[in-house]
Image 1 (cartoon, one colour):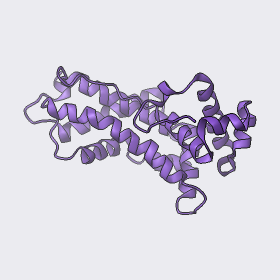
Image 2 (cartoon, rainbow, N blue to C red):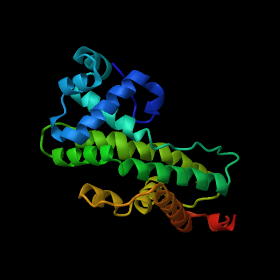
Image 3 (tube, one colour):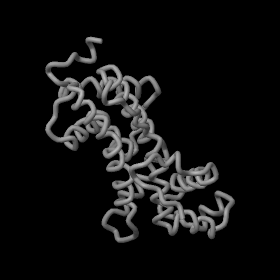
Image 4 (cartoon, helix red, strand yellow):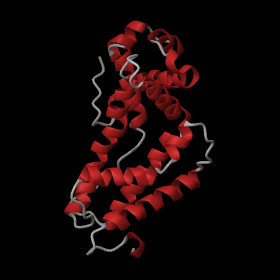
Length: 219
């Protein structure tokens, strides 16, 4: 059985065949939503149900791996805490913001989140908790070391890393995700996403940049 942690890069632990199976599961979520079954995934991915159970355990295990695979597309550029400067910190934050906007605006993420919201509190399964734990919460755990490195380097000033992360997340997301979930057809082009990532990062640095450090716009 595949043991994928929410805190590691799932793309590095999966085989190409497993990635193909999870992509098939994501496509089925887009097409069928609630009706995702192990049988349907096995049929779409041209593999046996026995293989799915061996790799992922059960349906919840498959859903967990699917969410982790989707979340792994949001990369966190590692930083060298000892040599960290404002330019590299800014680049890491901008890259995270751009990747996250690309992921949440994809058809697969929109479908996955709609199903998770529909299941929340319904008793059908734990998809809502799976999406939170392996999506948003996992991303927080992966980005917080970058924020803490920025604080250690004297570039950021905050008292609580979780609050700082939530502020950054809010600046990146704004109302984009809820509008997409409600069917608004936003034109999120590559250029628009890049511009939004830069804007969110600059706003974050204006709020949490250390007063003694240089602003990113001064570089």
